Image (cartoon, rainbow, N blue to C red):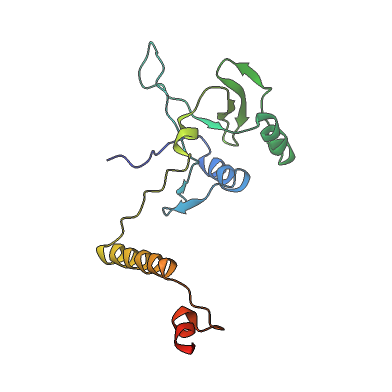
Length: 165
């Protein structure tokens, strides 16, 4: 079944935009040959919006702090738009070297990523039959030891007293 998504960003200066994803955003990549770098993206989600047209798609990257992201980009000499507050998130647009733009936003909406990143409950391991028998034998031995009368080493126990008399 589906195991991921492949996003394509079209650009008039694709080499410059690849360098941006590699050097500025620091995304891991695989070199597919001939300068084709394919980047690993962070976990993703997809939303389907109503439209009067088909085949209209947008790319938004998500962050935890849009203002912190803008400050980081400015320190690297990358221009970002002012933050626009929307019902669904705080958004900026980043200018790519090739002339295009991508949106980066801090979501305000619930995300399936939070649900998917929760640790799963560990399943109890099934014990083998021999492990169950061994555990039962250990429990029985401990119970017998606890129930057995204690003999005093110094006195030699109750039977030892009767023999001495």
